[in-house]
Length: 416
Image (cartoon, rainbow, N blue to C red; front, side, top):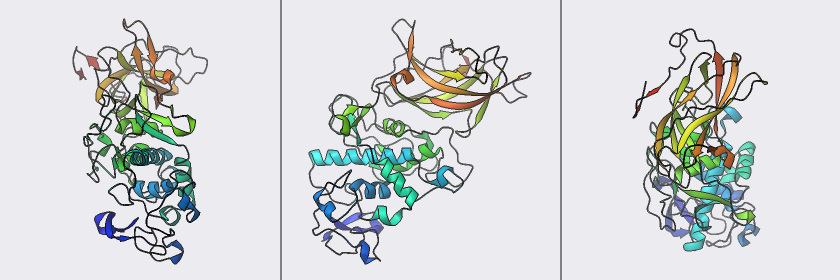
């Protein structure tokens, strides 16, 4: 444990180790209150990552991750008060950061040994959780670090080198980790939600802490306060962010014999052209097709071959007794390697007997068998689809009513 330099973003003063009672920054988050002075009897500590089992937790009552996630994700920096949960950082982003930080620490413990508290590794500053957070934020951090999930390559239970940084532009930066499998889990990936405001802060590899916040808020800002920087989609599950930023990985549960928690087939929507915000309602014509254009990422373990996967939907119409009609049209996604993204179209057909009113369109990927005669939804394997609010309206004239026109495919790119 070293005193840290605020002006250098948490770099260590290598010649100033922490000592019992020190109030230097890095040895404590609060330099003004003796109650938060450095609590350990030595500058070399052993502390519990997830709980208080470490020997030095006799002097300090909090797990390592509580302080670490607080500072690395900036949990104390909330969005505008008009946002859900008073603008607090969504739990999905907190859990994603916790899993990445836990994995990084597991990997260092396995292969490196002793680390320090500076940004050479990741910035750990005692009492960050206690000093910086209000009670609701503390509860979020406790809940977000509760489950001992971590990241591995697809064919091993060893923790990956889960590099991450404060922020990244679009796309992220390519990393070159030592691999067991043939997929580079630190490959560069598209991150369009960060294109407008993302900056390179840190090494830009793996999880972008601010990017993860953007995806979980559904805003282009990582501390959203304005109403005009919405993104078209929002991710409510930490696994979506983690499999987006780390290619071809699995997430495992250290509390359950390192059991795999993720299916091999996965996807996320990166953008839906017809939506301005994640909560927009699309209007569906009662007398014809309505087509959405979506950019999707293959976040799974395997590549998507040509004419083997398509983006489709499972609808819930307003009439409860209406037979559930599934789409029979196929919108094949172009061949897409793991980690890469592609733009495709999905055409929504409203049944003739559907009543006007609200509906839910749940986008989902389908995997086809070899001869194309049958398919399996990705959600059947346990991966979430993406729900869109919809309204069935009477369409006398598609253009006048502002309903989106069908897309025509001409054996190549999608055109309108």
